[in-house]
Image 1 (cartoon, rainbow, N blue to C red):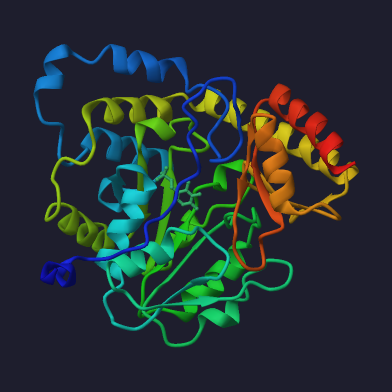
Image 2: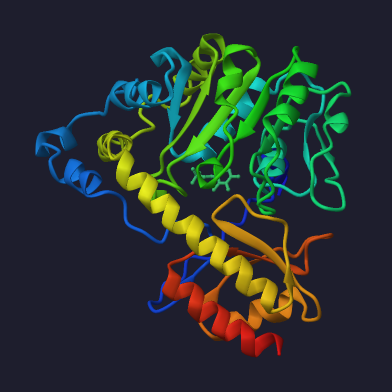
Length: 350
Ligand SMILES: *Cc1c(COP(=O)(O)O)cnc(C)c1O
């Protein structure tokens, strides 16, 4: 058929499985095992029924203001989107237009190459070192922009502020995006670098640390000029990306700081316990600063463990990719879930 030639063909991103049955221990998509703050639920319940009939605020002013205040920025330095996937996708479209290749690590969030292909942006992946570190020298050649997560996914490795500054400073003519999806779990944010580097953008999400993957909220902080540019693209695309419930829920989450911190501390404590247990069972892993552990067993293959766990109704993530196909990415659940995981692993790797 002649029309075959006019269709945009893409290999889509494949998200982690969302099982439809109950009773699964779900450790495969880095969701938070704890509910969001009571205030978040109340904010949604309190929404006036007539608010459902109106279009939401296209500028998302309430949430933009709450986040700007939270981070000590001005309102025109924050852009909000439908999850950070929306924010990053829109960033590829807005900021990577030089025709030169965008650089990102070979082992990283597997959506980056999908967006690059979708928007026909050339890219080059830079191999992480043997121990999964970013080598800043790799990011100093001519390029059309840079993006990487810190901590990186799926490795959990944290890079220092100095290293990030080194990369951003070496690339004043392109946009550098740091995806801080997991920064709340113990990393040092590079937000303070925004004062010095107008080419830096920092992306955050409500999906992991804020327990709100289902609400789809992500945001980006940066210089006025860059935030205006991405807003112009958003308004050329869809004025009403953020729905009314997500906006009020997002504000309420920022207001519940104490609950938020307690939740994160619980996840970190469970993560550290899980690290000790995994080591005891013969697993190796990069030291994770995220809400997951990227682990490989000394003798049993990643695929075998993945399948054995699935048979026990425990879902983890396995990537069938070079360099990492013996690893499993295990999200941190509740203490009880992690105890069950360790009990099952104990039998599987014996
Ligand atoms: C989870 C994740 C995202 C996307 O998060 P959403 O806000 O749910 O779209 C982006 N980047 C990284 C590295 C992630 O792990």
